[in-house]
Each structure stands twice: as C-alpha cells, then as structure tokens.
Image 1 (tube, rainbow, N blue to C red):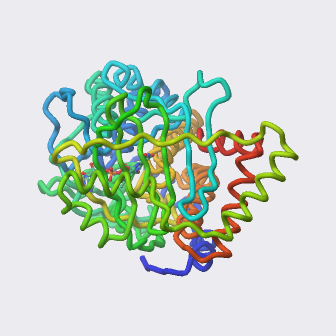
Image 2: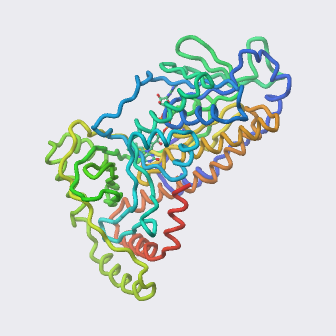
Image 3: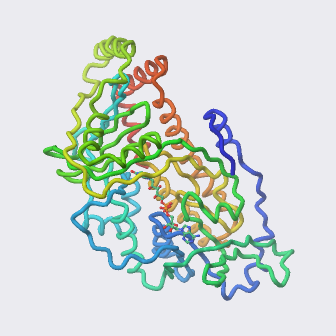
Amino acid sequence: MFSMTGAPLAAKKLLLAKCSRSIGASYFTSKSLHTNSENVVDFVISGGGMVGAAMACSLGNAPALKGKKIVLLEGAAEKESFTLTEKYSNRVCALSPATVDLLTDLGSWQEICNMRYQPVKRMQVWDSCSDSLITFSQADMTEDLAYIVENDVILASITARLNALGDRVDVRYRTQAKAVSLPTPVEDVASTESPFVRVHLENGETLQTRLLIGADGSNSLVRRSADCHTISWDYYQSAVVATLGISQMENNVAWQRFLPTGPIALLPLSNEFSSLVWSTTTEDAKNLLQLPDESFVDAVNDAYWHDRDKDSIAISLGQTFQGILNAAIPGGTSNRQLPPTVTDVVEGSRAMFPLSMVHSSEYVKPRIALIGDAAHRLHPLAGQGVNLGFGDVVCLTQVLVDAVQRGSDVGGLSHLLQYETQRQRHNLPVLLTIDGLQRLYGTKFSPFVIARSLGLQATNALDFVKNKIIQQAAV
Ligand SMILES: Cc1cc2nc3c(=O)[nH]c(=O)nc-3n(C[C@H](O)[C@H](O)[C@H](O)COP(=O)(O)OP(=O)(O)OC[C@H]3O[C@@H](n4cnc5c(N)ncnc54)[C@H](O)[C@@H]3O)c2cc1C
C-alpha cells in the first residue's frame, strides 16, 4: 500500500494500477476439488459488519447455493437481542433505493420498517462561498430519494434474517481471523499445503475454504494477506457526528452546505431530531468535541448561516448567470429553502471519525474476493459508502449463483474477475467524483469558486441532468 496527495496522479493510478493476473487453471482442476476437500467450507466471510452480514444472508438465501457450507466470522461479540431505545444512535446511513431493494429481498427492510427509518424527500446542497445551490426532489414528493437509518438498526435487521436462516449460515461471533494462507497451485501442493485458502483463527482453529470473502473493513486483513494492490490517501479531515434537536414542522429534507473546511450535513431522523455529519479539519473536529453543548449548537447554526466565506465576484457573476438561466429555462430552477435551526445536542452523542480514501485496484485473487470497505472506502459527503458495499453483495451473489449453475468451482478466478469488472465500472466513477468534489469545494480560490458556482447553477437549472444524477445515486 502507498499514499499520495496529488489527485490527478492518484486518479490515474486508481484507473491503471491493475496487476496482470492469469486465470490460473491450476488452482481449479478437478484434482484440486478432491484434495482434502471433506472439511472444506464453500464460503468463509471474514467480517460481520453491515456488508459482510448482508453477504452471508444473501448467500444463505440463494436457492442455487442450497447445500453449500457458509461461515461468517465476526471479531466482535454478538449483540444480545437488539432493543430499540428512544435515543437515536449517532451513526446513521443514507440508504439508496437500490439498497432498499436488496434489503427487501433479504427480508430485512421489513424488519427496519418495524423499527424506524426516515425518508428523505428533498436534498438541498449549497456553497458557503457563493450561495449557489442545487436541489433534488422527486417531482411529486411521493417518491423518496433516500432513507436515513441507524447503523445499529440496519445490522440488527440483517442479523434477524441471518438467525431466521438457522444452520444455513454458521455465524461465529468473537472469532477473529488472525492470518490467511493463500492457495497453492495444484501441481505444487505438497503434503502440508492446500489448493484452498486457509483462514487461521485467533482460537487456534484453521478453516479451509473454496472462497474467502473479505468484508473486514478498510484495514482489511484479507486484502493485505492477498497482497492486493491498494492506493490510499488521507483527507486530513474528520467527521463529527451528533444527534441534534431541531425546530422543524416536517423533517424530510437533507441539508448540506459546503464550507472551505469541508461539508456539513443534517440528515432527518424524525420531526424532532436530525443527525449531523460535519467533515472538517481534524483540529477543528477535536475542538468541536470539547465545546460545551450550547456553544456546539451555536457552532452548528453558525456553520449553516454565516457569510464569512462569501466571494463578491462569484456572487455578482452568479446573479447575472441566474438571470440568463431564468430567461432561457423558465421554471427550470428550484427555490431555496431555509434549513432548520438546531436547538440542542443530545447528551453523549458527539463523536469523530478520521476520513480517508482507500481503493483496492484488485477486488479478487484466486479464491479471494473483497467487498464493502475492504475494497473501497470513501469520503462520506455523498453518503455512498455502504450503498457501494451492498451493491457488491448483489453482484457477487449473482456471479457465484451463475458459476454454481454452470457447475464451476465457486473460487474460480474467471467469474470472480467478472465481479471485479462489473463493480469497478460502477464504483470507480463514484469514488473519483466524490474525491473530485471534496477537492473542488475545499478551496476559497476565486476562479475555482466562480467555476463551481456557475456549474452548480447550470446543473440545478437542467432537470434532465439532475434526474440522471438521482438515477445514478439510486443504483
Ligand atoms: C461519519 C460517516 C458517515 C457515513 N455515512 C454514510 C451514509 O450516509 N451512507 C453510506 O452509504 N455510507 C456511509 N458511511 C460509510 C459506511 O459507514 C461504511 O461504508 C460501512 O460501515 C462499511 O461497512 P463494512 O461492513 O464494509 O465495514 P465495517 O463496518 O468496517 O465492518 C467490518 C467488520 O469486520 C469485522 N472484522 C474486522 N477484522 C476482522 C477479522 N480479522 N476477523 C473477524 N472480523 C473482523 C469488524 O469487527 C467489523 O464488524 C459513513 C461513514 C462515516 C465514517
């Protein structure tokens, strides 16, 4: 792994750094399938976070994979029967409609509906340097853009479905993978080696598997053990999260203001509460955590309302451009709405998380596949991280089902490469766009402010472009 700071170079590396991999038939001959295979598990998923647990559930649900042995390893302890408390958790995700489709197929969206979620019907994003803005809403406000759900609720809903699968999935909590031994090509297999992947556990046990799925987060042991080429860089930012009391009659709008130090977002939880994700310099984040409650609330309101960053040239050019847009596209621009006033912060709800970008140029190796944050970690400004991970789950399940229906070995590199290609085609543009936005908005340099402000105004005026963006974010 290496780190870089230059975005263009990084983007190039992101796209080009593919190591050549042969299909390597010698891992997958019929001999390999019969070598010491009685105790071989078909799938081991390392990491039972939201994405790994969904993967286990998805494999366990697939009729074509009936009879396949599936093990899910999770280092943390099992949460004793989840009970929803009145107090909201400070960790939430904005789930896309495509994620809701997956969770519905798994039966866990129904569990979430029995707990709680808040639909987002409108989003307003604006620039503190020029006040140029973009809004997204489904035309008639009957369809939802996204759903805000607490991470604990998402995981509990998937765990409930895993439990309902009974012994289809062997879920092992407090079980940490300690090391991974890669498969040995069949012709080289000596008595002590294996054509399968071996997962060595903290408790001394070793599992042999046809396919190891790494869902073990951004510092993935599976990714490091498989020596997957990875690029990463630090944003030198942290996200401050908190649960905030708000004054709003109907709370179904997500509000994001881009400040030069990073975006601040308010996501609706209920008519009384919203969830804060405020990305800022790590030093600022530390200060925000130390502030007394009242000063913290003042700081959040100030971040939404202050005029300190305004660039007069960008504003006057923006006003002229807006006049031209209004004449050219009557009714094409959306009205600005005012964000709610934050009234208080829920005690003990403040926390901070360091932000970085991590992307594995290789999502697969012989008998290994990476999903979720183990393959890609991104800035939370567009709320896409776990949605990309759930997209990986859908794609990998389909590829594995197809492989089994063709009678192929589930760890075969040829179909794993189909998974990698399909997901990288989807994930890379999202990663690059989010990284680009983070950099474009992280400056007060006038030419950049003018360019991005006029671009945002033009995009906001063109409904078909906005619809395209909504469609892209929904999948
Ligand atoms: C502030 C913030 C806001 C965010 N908001 C959004 C949002 O609105 N929408 C969105 O889509 N995404 C959002 N994200 C991103 C999202 O939280 C992540 O993408 C998601 O949590 C990744 O899930 P995961 O299951 O891949 O990894 P993780 O959540 O990191 O889970 C990994 C799991 O693997 C286990 N594990 C690790 N190593 C081992 C091992 N060796 N053996 C066994 N188990 C192991 C860990 O215990 C853990 O349970 C946000 C992120 C942040 C920081």
